[in-house]
Image (cartoon, rainbow, N blue to C red; front, side):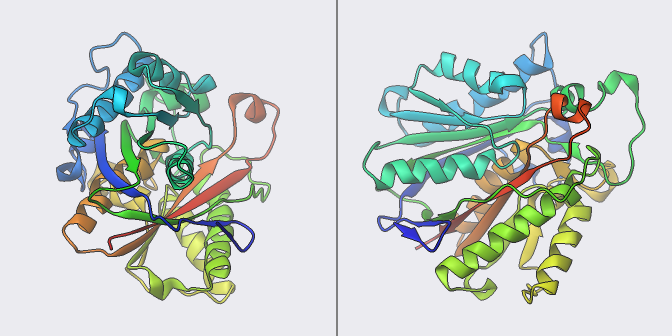
Length: 334
């Protein structure tokens, strides 16, 4: 049911019965390598383009999630997926391989929680029994589309971020073992006039803050309800801006409780600039690291606030600013 203006509360508390996280060689060197199900040693994944490699990441993640749930593809009623590449090609082509009824979404890097919110809504409404949701990104594919091909060796400022090469997937069902989705807050598009594609964290931070505030207001709760509140891919720069904005609005979240998936995934010596970005940042950290911690009973309640910069090569070339969005999903281990 709708609570407040922006939040869905799921009375049946749909279950995340299976998750998977797949990464590339850079992710294999990072802090969260043990939380990945599959780590590839080559960013090409045996394909002849980076875009096809991303499709393979997505196929690996979805196949792994289905296998871990002891299901067959025929047991899945809906596949929801999104990515960053033109017309979400990796998702659509992975859907061709899966041959599962498909809904493609684009929320940029917020696609992971957008998909999880929609999957939970479908299960809550009894429109599907098993919904597979996924999101992916690839460093070289994203660089080529949104900035400069890596072969150019273009210099980057400290505010830049490293797009995760990976994919994360989850299966949501009405019953089963696993963490439960209890609520989702659908974000609004926020644009503060920032136009620098090398400073995505600053562009997305206000959207994250707006959604967090809406979530607390709609549910009449505060930060104390959650063990962890994690934004998707603000990185070090954007996360600090979000902290400052929340404090200005009277919401000071204690250190250690408010974090960012983009800050967690890589080690400091990996030279990932301000941290990780991409659809796979929140997808792999949530469906790998955080879900594993919940299963170990280290975390009981988490709020994942996936952030997305809704720019395109066209909007950038037309010198437009970067509209951003954030979707929040509450996950609880009951």
